[in-house]
Length: 165
Image 1 (cartoon, rainbow, N blue to C red):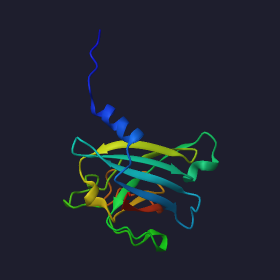
Image 2 (tube, helix red, strand yellow; image 1 turned 45 degrees about the horizontal axis):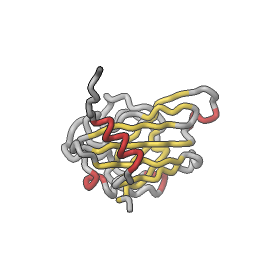
Image 3 (cartoon, rainbow, N blue to C red; image 1 turned 90 degrees about the horizontal axis):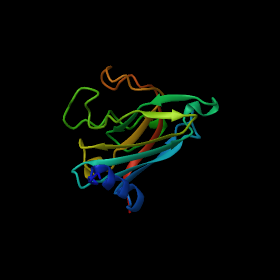
Image 4 (cartoon, rainbow, N blue to C red; image 1 turned 60 degrees about the vertical axis):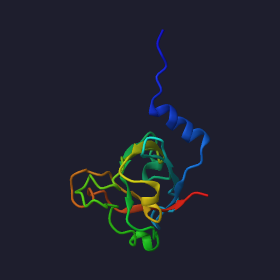
């Protein structure tokens, strides 16, 4: 008989299922990608980090049946999503690290025929740190090498991170 071991996953599942996020970013597409939309939620955990859940619709590969592609997702310095997102600044990087070690560097989204769903845990920021910043979806994947932002392409989606009520 195996003993049930409590792991962070159990706590994370409960957060996602029963709790409200402490912050969220409603994602909208730019003028070239008006059907792109989604929601990125941020949950404070009992483990000192943040659980991030992203669900994105309308990614560029939506029209290609059976397609999949990677899209970079980052937290940027400013929450101003106006003017095709050119006011969002650089990646959130309070400790002045090289890319891909910015606090705002997040795992890529895997879009499958226009849809992506991702959940991950991150200890590089708190909810309070990111309020008023933005989540940016890029047109390409992050190469995790090129400075300062991974050569990830055009900003195609943006949402200001706001405290959830």
